[in-house]
Figure 1: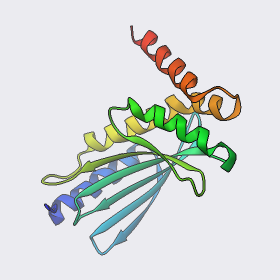
Figure 2 (figure 1 turned 60 degrees about the vertical axis):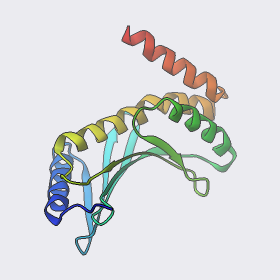
Figure 3 (figure 1 turned 30 degrees about the vertical axis):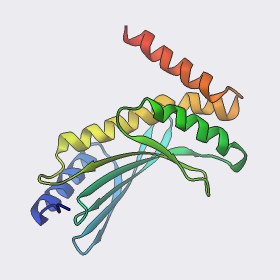
Length: 168
């Protein structure tokens, strides 16, 4: 397996930090002997405060961005939420939702391989943009599913039909 160089790894970290600062994220760096980095952050959005985790592992050449939905899905609603995110995930070209059945944590994940060059500002910016837009886009249909009794298939179909009408 290819491993990224120390220079590429450090350049990736520098680019990620620079973009987070530019976007006015509040964040904290957690480093482990130059092999792994964990960046934890917060950003306020129209749907509430979102938590962000950026995980990079030099030896595995992985970059993973997690953006956590502000809702915690309560136990009685987890099966509905699971159906909702399965249906939402089906058509997503980039990234996916994940639901922790133990604690109800809902997050959106984008992973990128980092093999021979560092993560660029543009790549990380696109990952952040896609994650934020996806979380915000599916927020209202999710709330309708969990709290208004709308079936997941109906909520997703209505949201995606509206998007298609707006793009024409």
